[in-house]
Image (tube, rainbow, N blue to C red; front, side):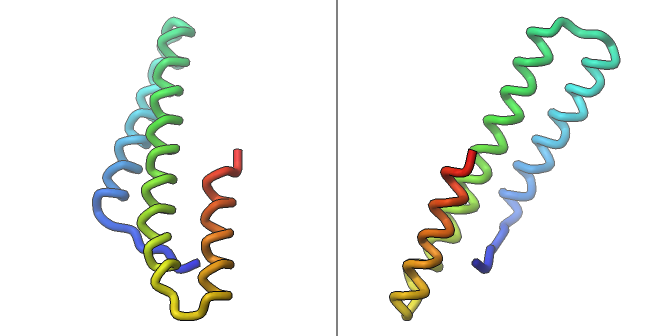
Length: 85
């Protein structure tokens, strides 16, 4: 599957990276466990949303594919990416 990434996707990932760096600082400062877990949950949510955006945006290309067999295979790959947990 050929993927296309835009600046908004890159910015989301950079934001998540910043959140992770913040979590590391919190852990080094021995922050309360609940606060660390809350921040990690926010990072996970952010990454899950980014995964959904990437798959959804690139699914458009799959639906425009001329070859139905290839289109079905790409759609199956996209679904597997979303439900893999």
